[in-house]
Image 1 (cartoon, one colour):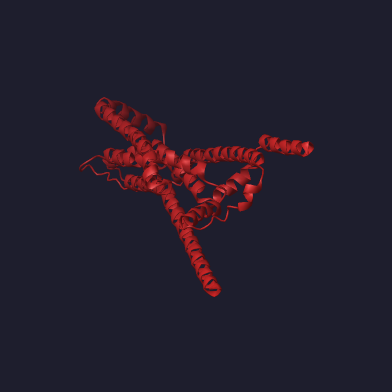
Image 2 (cartoon, one colour; image 1 turned 90 degrees about the vertical axis):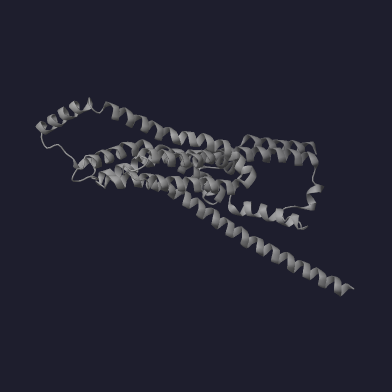
Length: 341
């Protein structure tokens, strides 16, 4: 008997010593099969992309505005198309710009100030979004709250891409700063919500759906399929140690999911210059380039909306099946009772 208890203790220690089997492939596979995890990853990617794209958009936008202001024959051509054909022309252009700098010092300072406002408007919105993100998660629920902040990101991205470059009313940079603030609220709200979604998500959608269905069954007075009466016959000490080992394994898996979720931010940082380089390499319309870089930031939000709608439909279908099954069971019990009587 003592020898068996020692073997049990050794097995438990081995479970504590060995981390849960979660290779990179298995971690990615589980993430792709779980809507909550995938939503958190895409949301973080969207946040990082929309946060850094302004660093490339502003120089291109300033170039586009300067070309339009000077009424060039090709107002929206790529900078690569304006090549200096000789050193003489290059020298003349440099001299002219040097002479014009004295007259345009005030304009240059104003442009730098506007650039700073555009860049900082997103940060201001992110601060506000982080403050209200957790509260929205408590009031609306994590899934509905992350949908709301992603809708803000969609609106901010599309609004930024559709600003007017005409001189009437607000300037292009002032309009961009307003839309970037709205975008920042959505981006800031993603951080707390995505972390919670990643930490509480499980291996796949079926596990999460089963938990939701079990809670529905318990509320309706039914029994959870995962509960077993035979569990009470097990030894209390063995159950306690096994539970502790399981909780430790779940915590490690939770930390790995969180790390995987926030690692997608690095992909967002790389995506912006890659897209800009490709568009510039193909000498696309400059006005199209900066609008495309801003507008494409709404695409991850649409993917998140699709994922949430699909998961909601799956859960509704499963609930209907469970309710239908419970109705059939109740009718069978009534028939049995009537037959016994």
